[in-house]
Image (cartoon, rainbow, N blue to C red; front, side):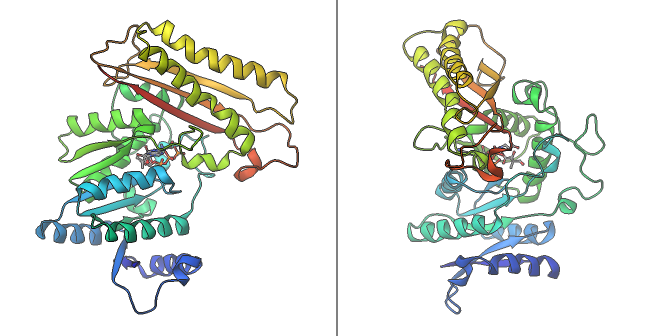
Length: 370
Ligand SMILES: Nc1ncnc2c1ncn2[C@@H]1O[C@H](COP(=O)(O)OP(=O)(O)OP(=O)(O)O)[C@@H](O)[C@H]1O
Ligand SMILES: CC(C)(CO)[C@@H](O)C(=O)[O-]
Ligand code: BAL
């Protein structure tokens, strides 16, 4: 049975974390004496580093899974992938302010610390039984730890030490979220420097993030290998995402339009089409039909959405392509914004925040090279 061990934290942080843990039914179930092993929780850099150094001297390999918490099956699949090829897995949980624009959802970003720890603990018990690598540590830094000299700045051009990767970071997601990839690259550079992992794990769901991180690792000669793990989906096809907790059943059902549209375009490619307009027409057909259908419904029945982009792009540069070269493949991706519900019925299952929070959904499908 795994348990948690607070390593090198300030006493206040320890008390807070214990208070948080002790409120979970899971921690109440932990046996009092039979503690076989602990997952370390680090809040600061120095104790993590000395622990990491000991692992290095002991010949252990380390995989890092960066997250913003609110863990779901997508995150769990990343941890599984890390445990399959490293003896020790570090999971970071940190909601990084510099990747949120000033009007974005930093304040409402879901935080589920107790459930996150519980899931990691359960997974670690399972990994132990299967003889796989183990979850060694959770790194949950404070913002003062991550941004030690200046408070984090989400404005442009902004004040502080930043990593910028251009032009990849300015297209697609970067166009709508201009500070996003600067924040992601900056915090990942910090995490990579702190943990010095042999391998780092990212989800295909955030495809542009994977391209930015791979480029950063290459250009800055960071000594780690970047692994990309396939997108985990709900049974109906919706890509799992922490923000999905804000989708009630109506917005969830309508939000499926994105994965369906991308799937239709993928089918067109698989049937031999390579021309951009022809492939994307299949996606737009699905979207336009859903959009028109929603507009004809009553406010109590519909869920409106806005399309940000539907893209067909090169897998390495994310530059839009006119024709897919089947030897290279391509990335089909899209983003839509689910608008708040206008009127409820009083009978349907609502999401967190009663479906009043706008939700950005992103998804992508790699078109395979053949
Ligand atoms: N459905 C998924 N399948 C595989 N990996 C995923 C999935 N969702 C997220 N990840 C990966 O988990 C890592 C941490 O992501 P993050 O904590 O932001 O969760 P998220 O679900 O992407 O949240 P958000 O709602 O903010 O997009 C990233 O590498 C991300 O790509
Ligand atoms: C990589 C990451 C943890 C950086 O904050 C975040 O962008 C995410 O969760 O995908
Ligand atoms: N998964 C990427 C984090 C974000 O959207 O803020």
